[in-house]
Image 1 (cartoon, rainbow, N blue to C red):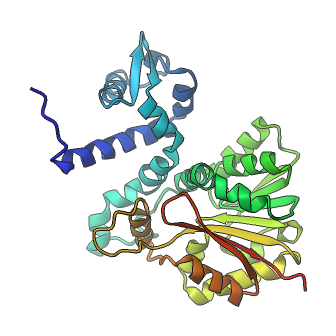
Image 2: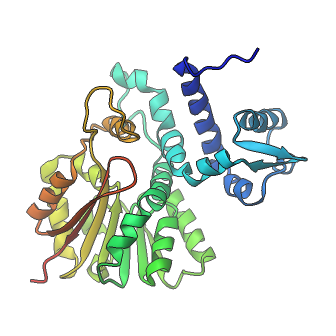
Image 3: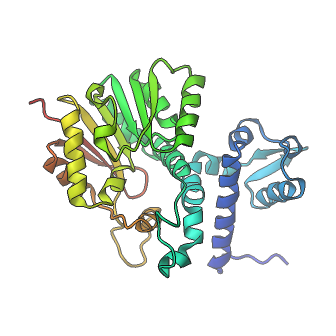
Length: 326
């Protein structure tokens, strides 16, 4: 008799953990898009035969794929997961190694940033996919309310988000990212999109605002899930950074940032994503702020707050600010 596990949450957690890891690995291998577009014949991939067969069998058992002859294709559930794969990449790809060594961090045997790191490439790629999937409606509503012809994307990852924005708005773009691998992938994606004459990619540590090129030419800065990286060094450092950004941008330029607010409840909250997000940022001793707190920080730095909008992404706040004309 088949034993159902609805009354045993441990097995659902195991299922989610394993599925997350497997789909993240397929994305890293570059085969998840192929699976979504027209399916995959595993024998054609050249992967380790026994483990590959077990991988596709597992995904089939969990209702993520189904077999059509020798080819595997996504089920409806699989397509839902594919559309929201940014969350899986961000977690398993970006923070998987750090969470797997959590015991050593808690015991002070190792230190984050020195002995343990996240994978910046997959944090950036996952964040970009999340933003494109779950913030697009609110984002486009905001973009249609302002004027600009050049977009700067801080933390651009593989460039997909910036490419999408430039196509949707007919603007030129420049993407900044600290990861060499992400920048290389972004340049390739820009070239394949036929936008190399409109979008540039710059490898730079954007937390040092004075070293970020071309800001004087930009009318709109997009900074999704980036500003808390500056906040990590203290609130005064954040305001100093934003002041530098305000100084370098032309009058009338806008900055649009997205961040996750802390959960509203501290006990047994039913909120999705934000508790997990806030916890991963705690690995780096990073604090999260409310949308209103972000607005106050921008105001101290010399910006005018135009809008603060909740996003479809659980816990998210989009904050639009503007540099005064004079």
